[in-house]
Image 1 (tube, rainbow, N blue to C red):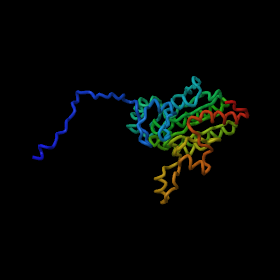
Image 2: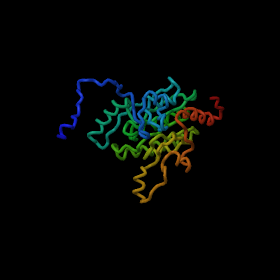
Image 3: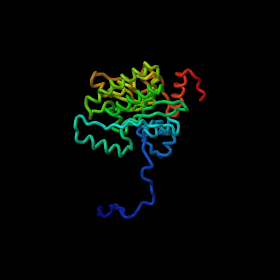
Image 4: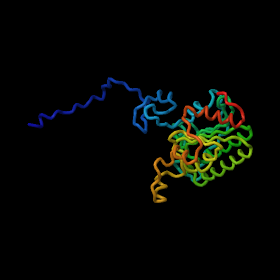
Length: 284
């Protein structure tokens, strides 16, 4: 009978280990080209896919390692607790889980350091913590960093990556837009340099406040920048948007940003801008 000719599928014994032992956690997949990449090779390539050039998002610690001179970063001793103004039951639990997972207390790290020998105040956001959303703590830490830049008479550098204001904190998260903007106005009055670096993605209230107020606005290649997402805008206005809308390249063409800088060149570019602002000569 034909049934007898059908071969039964051999089910592997679960107790038998496969002959090929692949280390767990050593590989990752590129979101753009879907290539499987060895994490150590990716790290050595500035977290850029060697196959297609796609930019991976960077953890705060990796960004500090890339931009700040080794051993010079000093975090501001300014720890405040995240509020829960809406008294959401799951919000504190989510924060606790994220802190354990990301090993950072909030979506931004602020402090001082040197960039090729030049002292700066630097703020770095991390998308891994609630998509880099700006709540009370993020707004307060950035405002404090701006005030310290004024006090110490140092240039300010902010790396932005965010989905916008933090909805879990309601209206008080929106107030951080005004607070950071007012602080930057004082920085400008003091004649100090502010360099804003936009990374993927930078959206919402962060774009509508401190991310767009730099004396010089830089962006990484391919970074998506805007207030609302493309789909939301199209649904609101009832029209299709141009190809590549909200990419760093599109925004450079339309004058929203000053320069697109490859990740490996960011440190030297920021250093040059600081030297130019001081009226000195960049010998780097």
